[in-house]
Every structure is written in structure tokens, then in C-alpha cells.
Amino acid sequence: MPHAEEQPPPTGCPAVRVIAMPADTNPYGDIFGGWLMSLMDSAAGSVAARHSKGRAVTIAVEGMTFLRPVVVGDEVSVYARLAGVGNTSMRIDVEAWRRTRHDDRSYRVTQATFTFVAIGEDRQPRSVPPLPTE
Image: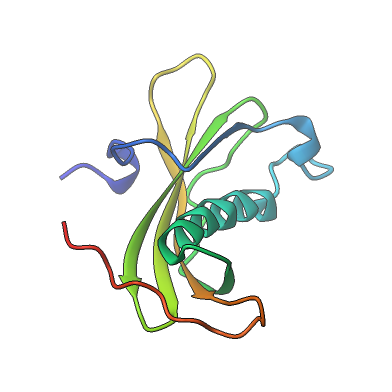
């Protein structure tokens, strides 16, 4: 079995795709981990809003480990998949992948599970539809 970093990226379209720019770095020129986490939160939030048909907020992030660096000029693709649904909550598995501008190979940078709760206009939890069957 290939090493996890050598596996191909998930199939389908990424929820977010962006080029890492100099403004996304710390004083040493390294991409901020928080910048990458923000992209992942945005991707997960998009999945949560679509599934819940409304507003949803992040309540937890589990298991984020940075496997590889992202450098200025890399294309970062973030994939998000609805993994589980509770009464008001949704678990979304998210993976971030990088690809240099002049190469076809992609490498997983990090992954995590984001938990969102759907909320109504009163900012109180509201129920969400069940997990779709495939």
C-alpha cells in the first residue's frame, strides 16, 4: 500500500482552490498554519450550509496534523465531505492538498474533522436533514 502522502487526492472537485501568496506567510516566509486552517473551515462551512440549508457554525476541529509545508506559489486544493449527521450537528472530513505550479503531483498537507451546528435566526441550534444515502 502506498504511503498516505503518495496517494492521489480525493476524486471530485475541491470545495476551495487557491494559490498561496506572500501575504499568507509569517516573517520567515512560511505559510501560516492558521491560513490553511481558515481555508479548511471555509470548505467545511460550505458543505455544512448546503446540507443544513442555512447558517451553520464551527464548534470543533479534531485531528489536525501538518504533514508537509505549503510554499508561496503552491496551488492548495481543499476537499470536504459530509461524514456524519446528528440532530443539529454535522461532521465534515476535510483534506488539504498542495501542488507546485509546474508539476502534476499533489501532496496531502493536512486533514481534520470539523464539527458544525446548524443555527436559526435566533442563533439557537436547529435540526438538520439526515445523512443522504448513496
